[in-house]
Image 1 (tube, one colour):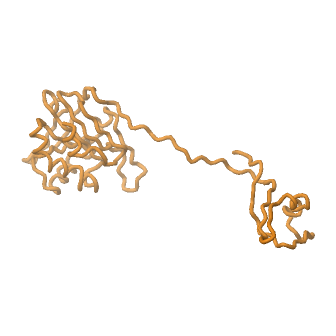
Image 2 (cartoon, rainbow, N blue to C red):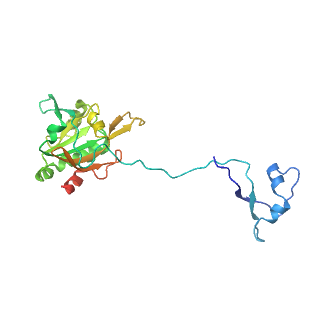
Image 3 (tube, helix red, strand yellow):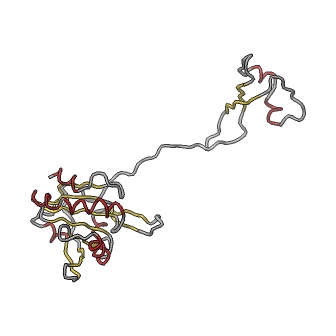
Length: 234
């Protein structure tokens, strides 16, 4: 706490003032002739500038904040750690795949969303990759996969709700294993909808298991991880 040395207050005082015994103690001690003579005034105004010692300790405030850097365990040039992900095939059978299977000897785009059925993910992020899937494949992309820290049943329901075919593979990182390995956890435990720990939004281009482009968003923001951004990077 910082102690203010002095405090300047502007007070409306009548042009004629009587300092009687009923004057509040603060002013009976402060409004002395010597004090009043130092006040600035004009003949056309009764507004005085009064300077007096504050008997209070004022808190010291700061408005500056240090932003959290956007960082992850991986970066451009990193080899992706292997991890197992799950999904339902067109026949309704639960299947598993690995990051290695998705990327080894291939060019892949992996993108992540904070949660299935959430507004930005459902209205913009995932549909954008579905819409641009043909253009991405025409530029040499073999695999397009969406990853979320949701269970495989939720991912299947989300796929059916959005009427997505085989344009994009929807993968469950249900326990957040892959998300933790690459260091992109997003803690939403304080949110009332109960999302818990999810993945930050990102899109990455991976060539034979090596990260070539990594567009990692701040939290769940959606500014440069779209399908259009990845097309521009190819």
